[in-house]
Image (cartoon, rainbow, N blue to C red; front, top):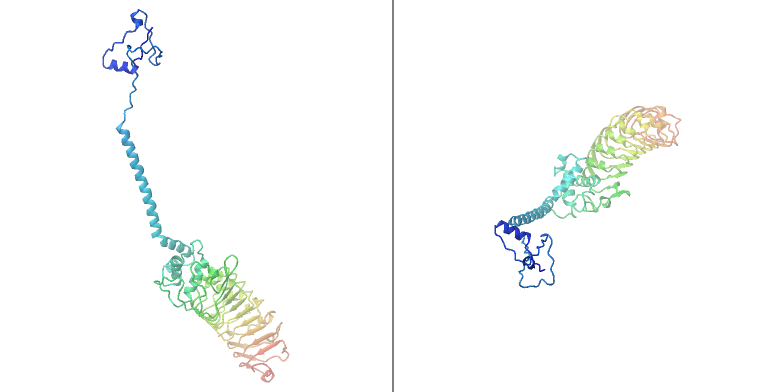
Amino acid sequence: HEFIHGSTTSTSRNNSNNTNTTQQQPLSSSTLSGTPQQHHDPEQPRALHDDDDDDDSPDYYQIPRAKPVSSFDDCLRTRNVVIVLFLLLLLVGGIVGGILYVKNNQSESRTDIITNLLSTVTPERILKDSSTPQGQALNWLANKDIETSTLDITLQRYATVVFYFSTTTQKRNDNDDDDDDIPSSWNNTRRWMTVGLHECDWGYIACNQQDQIVRLDMAKNLLQGFLPSELAQWSSLRHLHLEGNELDGSIPHEFSSLTLLETLDLSNNKLFAQIPDTLGSLTRLESMYITNNLLSGSLPREFFDMTSLQSVDLSSNRLQGTVGNELSNMLRLKYLDLQDNELSGTVPLSMTTMIELSYIHLDNNRFTGELPESAFFFYSCVELTLSDNDLRGPIPQNFDHDRLYLVLGDNRIENRIDTLNLKGN
């Protein structure tokens, strides 16, 4: 039997049905011979035989239909490309704009960060006043000391910069861009105000291993101005030496925060006002020297709570009031100098019970009254000077001349002939 070479596909048949066109199938030899034609499943390809090479038999090939291209899909793809490009443009623009914004507002952001820190100890209205030492310190930290990270700017550094601007009379020229040459009335700045350099490496300052200031020794350096309260931020300070300068103003109440302070020397300045009662909290203070200033008022009761004091020199001021028996609270006191003031009342007899006391200078005051016999007997060898007061009374004949060096000149002392061996009489 001969088979039809090729076949019509189901698609071709469908197309023929849709067009109502009847296509005549060619007759095979089986049909002509009366042999029933075998039907083939249209879903399965027909088998081809080697004898299917008869050119007289027509060939029917399956022609695949191309998938139609939708213009709508092209439109979607184009739109997506445009959206992606637009988003990329927005992203790049945002990055560039952010960089420019940060660059243009970097100093302002730094100022805000530093201001928030400093406002915890200084009112913001003072910080924003460029004429104040605090405002000048903020400006220097924010705009000049840019080599120091905001993370490294501490209240200690701020207090140190405030101290500089508080004790120099020459104003910094804001138009001067030379950070290494800040004019000062100081005798020697010694690396102070060096940008990027830690304050522990500035002159006159000593720090501990934790980079905390423990000592400032700036005696006789032509400091002019006042003591800023911000110095209380030197919480680890143990020794403060500022004698021999031209500082004025009052001693800040905030110094009570310097609870580790052992030495306070403010002698030979122009400090005035009263001694703050808050200093009574300095229980570790051993030496206080504020001689030759303009301090006034009376000694506060809290003053005698500084029980660690060993040396006190408040001579040559304008102190008034009395010295009570609270003096005996200072059990470790060895040296007391209150001469050249305006103190009055009676001489505190409690000093005779103080075992460590060796030097008492109460000259040139307004002490009155009669010296009792007990005033001439001490537990230790004592140098007692009481000249230039208004004291009266006899001197005991049996007091120990070897243990007591007594100066009583310019008083109303009786039995003067017996006191000729006393200095100043």
